[in-house]
Length: 253
Image (cartoon, rainbow, N blue to C red; front, side):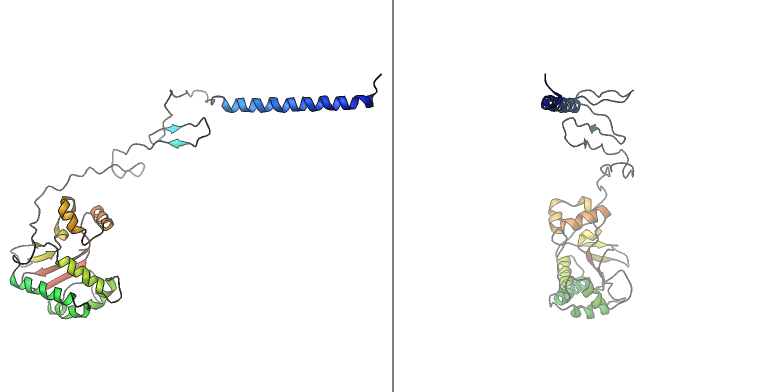
């Protein structure tokens, strides 16, 4: 007859086998549940194959079933531009269709006084010394505007706007601007003046491909995109009155 002591090893082996079987069974059930379809709440129907439930703002949510991350299809742009509750719609603004300013190049069509002032400004800028512009600035009545703000020494203002301490970058910009095409504005009036570059008085969305190349001699593409968004040219320009007064060299007006 087997004693209780002798039966102990047998009982322990049986317990170990039962425990192992239990672990295998529970693991299999968990794996099966992970592969089971997602249970939907009452009243919610399963979307059709290849479809997905809609999102509140449009688009659809893709429910993962294989461990992939959630993803959402981007909603379509709103019908109304600048809707703060949705995606900005593409601009539907019509391209400029009005009359375009007459663009001219060179100096032959300039009045003699305007031509002389332009040449004097170019000669001063080529020296590399902003101080050489002072006499030309102070000769005008009122003095040449170099900033939209009043006050301050004009040469120091130009140096402050330059990318280098000496102010030579702004002189290079002045030369590039005066080398571009120009337009006449307020023709036949007491305020008649000549403006360089013509982009300062030209609709940006009407520029042709060759004109864009001219523009990029003065601006970067990034600068242009910002100005197009603002709706106007905002870099440096020069204005000379019909009587030869150098009236402006500034940005933003």
